[in-house]
Amino acid sequence: MTKLALAVDLGGTDLRAAVVDEAGAVLALATTATDSHGGPEAVIAQIVDLAARVRADAGQPPVAGVGVCAPGPLDPVAGIVLAAPTLHGWGDVPLAALLRDR
Image 1 (spheres, one colour):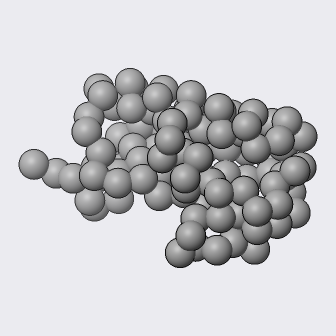
Image 2: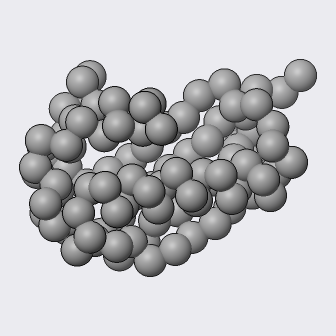
């Protein structure tokens, strides 16, 4: 069975999510405008919604892992957005923990 991943690209303008296979083929993709002025909770809700949408579009497959890229500086080991210049209120946001809780 092919392992799948959920990929999230968090940008100040656009938020993208995709389900991809081991070869990098995109099985489902969705994009929305980032609520960059809504603060971390608003954007995290958007990420959760977009992730659910692409998983549904791909047939609700189990995913082996989740990858998120975000504007930095970041602490990639702790999963913390230290100071995202394009996202209002994003200072020391524990993004990995918040998404894990959701």
